[in-house]
Image 1 (cartoon, rainbow, N blue to C red):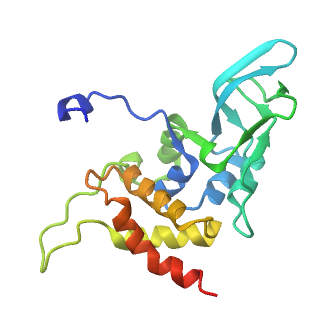
Image 2 (image 1 turned 90 degrees about the horizontal axis):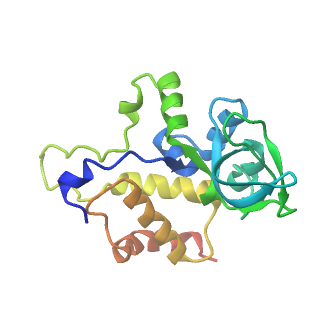
Image 3 (image 1 turned 135 degrees about the horizontal axis):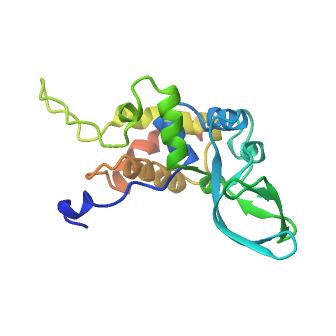
Length: 213
């Protein structure tokens, strides 16, 4: 782990997962896709080398058309596991067709990104308190009160867990859900995030109830 003095010198994040941006604004990924469809912010993917047109090769962070990833974040029904992206945009150019591979590039929900610049512009325009209000910094330590405060924010944990299951259903295994929620804790930059066994104990009763025949 880097020393504290070094951490302060690291640059800001280049992009966010679409799901992270949605959680940052307390909305669903479906909402973010809707705003992107209206031209309020751009969505991106990290593209492996592909051919555009006859000879041009493109790779790196490119923009995509929001409606093409909507099946990954369906509000009703089971989301698709993947979609094929066949048109991308780099810089100020128009969207162009991928010629090789001929069927485009397959992406999953975790591949859909929002650039940091897009997040900042969106917050400056629509968030009353500005970007600082929606900072990804860890919450301030609660002031001491009666009784010992919980070490982890389990109330928010269960709220996020409920929203995940409501929007996307249960994954194939309980272990997958445990890993997802562990990643959620880590994205909150919680230095003392609980281990998987602790998270599994919290999830087990929910999983058993939902899987009951």
